[in-house]
Each structure stands twice: as structure tokens, then as C-alpha cells.
Length: 536
Image 1 (cartoon, rainbow, N blue to C red):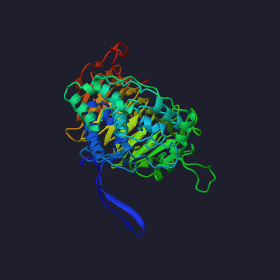
Image 2 (cartoon, rainbow, N blue to C red):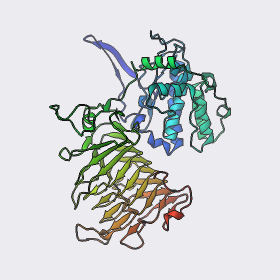
Image 3 (tube, rainbow, N blue to C red):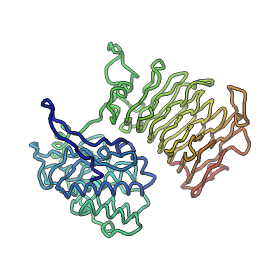
Image 4 (cartoon, rainbow, N blue to C red):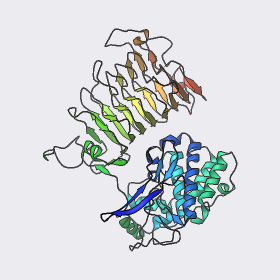
């Protein structure tokens, strides 16, 4: 099947088994889920192809049993390819594992019958539930159930009704919720039927199968059984590749500065595609890692996920007096950062201190629930300088400053759009060519920045304090946003209460296209409800 990664050869060499498979370059869906939240139709189109591939496997008598975003590869054209049939079994055959109650599948995407264990014979409905869980995450931007406690997560999957989707698309909601039914027989009868339902929704046709509401049935999961499942699950569930266990930037190799795994070490040693988390017992509510200025920025040159969502307040990466960039994302890297705050003790003064006060991005970067507070320097982009792919959701930029362009964010957009959704920009300052909040400069004519439900207020574009103005714009233009080249599209945004030196550019300097209702100028407090960022 064109959407299943083919195996070319299986054999043994010098006593070691091996197999060869097609190389799919482009990374996994796991690192690109944010691309689909703003476009449910794009998510549905993708899942139609995945569902048809799963149906093909089912027709051959094979259950995957571990469908998840990490097992869906995307090629350069964005086509999905299902991989990792390591847990697959023939339909109707029990797992054959000797430990009673063993569950198979990744807990966030496993079906209720998998979560309960007990050696049940699984059916195609198991994979259909997983497809629904993946679709739910793509559309909603969150997993169906979330818990860092394994036993609690299994109980949620087995017993609790999924949270109601927030998407306004009722038919799509019905399709997702039907896939997530507790009873296998209440789900779509086949993966092909799911694909048909999604195609009907894409074509604007009502789906009979998705309309029918089936009441939830709560199936109790005994604590003892849950514990047995969890015990067995620990034997195979792939734990995060690296867990940061010390607040130190980097440990003394001679062992004089403590024990554990530092963030810098975890990033350096992690394999491509790894997920880095932070040990909750080590990082309290005020979780902070102060980076050592002598070691400089942390370079990420491979696909990686940096996830601090398990901590109550996330994690803070802090640079001491003088300030310096925290992260540098390499050109080929696909990186996801979740719930990380970037701060600095003091701003670097004067020009020429490097691009991006917190992050320089040359790769593909996704930021979720991140905060950028009082970063800056002499280069462009007080918080971020990006000339790669960039997606930001629910991020806050406050008090960042630059002696170049883009008080919070400077984007040099390529063919890959830059997208910000529900992001807040306030009290950021650009000293020079402008863009107190964001400065956009695209080297390609089709470069685009898309802002949805974003708020810009109290940002400033001032005259350069480090050099004599060479052009009129050096005096400060675009207190909120400056578009120098490329295109900027705004939807349901608030851009008001910003300041600039050049009259008439207090909020926006440059050409901006608007979709829907936006509030530009005036008092931000007068903006209609439903506009701007939802974060504070």
C-alpha cells in the first residue's frame, strides 16, 4: 500500500537478524501535529489516507495495535506512511504473552479494551479507536487523556468519557467521538468506513454513521487489575529517551558538582526523535535552570521534543547578567518545545550581540505554551530570530528588547509559513528599524506570516540608541508590527495601544491583509469579545 512503509529484505548477517525498509525523509507526525490544529480539513485529508492504509492491513488480517503520531512518517510532500508494525498480530489471535493482564499499545492512543488487558482477542475496532485518538489530537491540539501517572492514565482510557472537542465542526466532532466509543462494536465498522465518513464531511455531506449517538458505558477497571497491567506495561512502554534530573547546566565530569543528567547533556546525547522531559521530584514549583555563560547556547541539530508539561509551572531557562541566546536550532532539525519559559537577568547592551535573544531558528520549530520574558540583545529578534519554519500556540512575549529589528520576534520567512495562534505580545521594544512586537522580512515573494487570535499592546518602536539613523525608518516604525517584505495575514487579532516614533505607524507599518474581524488602534480594553489571545 502506498501509505505503508514497505519492507525490502529480511535476513541475518553473522548471526544478527536484520531487515531493510524504505527511507522516508521528513520526520514523524509527532513533531508536526501543531500544523493541523488550525486547519481541521488538512487533518481530515491526512487521516483519510492513514485510515485507508490501516484498512488495507486489516484486509490482510493484520492489526497494528500501536498506531500513534510517532509511527506515522511524513515524506517531503506531506504524504503519510505507517511504520513500526512491531506489535502487530493476526486478527483474532491472542497476544501470546505469558503475563496475565498485559496491555499492548501506547497508553495515550490505546483502546479501552487494550487498557483493561486480560488477554482479550482484539479486533480492527482497536486500531479504529487509535485513529480517532490521533485525529482528536490533530484537531484539538491535545491528547484525549493526559496523566503522568501510568495507572491513572490506564483508568482514564478504560473508564472516562473523552473531553468534548472544542472544534465548531459538529460533524467532525461526531466522527471523532464515535471512534472513541468504549464499546468496540459502537465504533465505525471498518477503517474504510471511517475514511468514508471523513470524506463525506470534507465534501459537505452529512454522515449517517457519524450522526448516530451511542451512550457511553462505564466499565469499571479494578485497581488490582490496573496495577497488574501497569506492571506489565513498564516492561515495554517506551519511556522518554532522556529525563533531566538536575538543575545544573552541566555537571563537572570529575563528579564534584553533583549527580544526574543535565539538560545540556540530555540534548547532546539524545538520539534523533527523542523526547526530553524533566524529573518532577527534582524540579519544584519554581523550576529553573541557569545556563552557564561560558558554555554558551544549547545547540539542537536533530529532531527533538523538549517537554516540560509534567511540571506545574513548566521549566525556566535563564541566562545570567549580560544575556545570551539559550537555544540554536539547526537547519535540518525538527524541534518541539512545550511549556518552557525563557528569561534573562539583564539585556546585552549595544549592537552586534547575535541574532535572537532566546532562540535562533534555522530549522522547523514548534512552540507550545512557552513564555519569553525580558530577553534581548544587539542583534535582530529580542526573543526569537527565525528564518525557518515556525509555529507558535499560546505563547507570551513580554518585556523583550532589541537594538536591531523585532523587539520580540524577527522572522525572515521562506516558503514555509510562520503561524502564531493565541499569542500575546506586550511591552516589547525595538530600538532601530522597528517592529516593536514583530518584524517581518521575507527573502521569497511567497513568504507569509499568519497571526490568528493574537494580541499586540504596549509595544514600542524607538529610534536607534546605538548608531546614527541612516534611514527614516531607523527612527522607529511599527510599534506593534512592521512588515518590510513578504506578506502578513491577521485574523481576529487585537493590535492597539502600541507606540512608535514615526506618526501613523504606532500599531502597524507595512501592508497587512485582514480576514474576519480585527481591532486595530484605540484602547485595547474596547476590543470586542472573542478577539485576541486567550493567554495572559
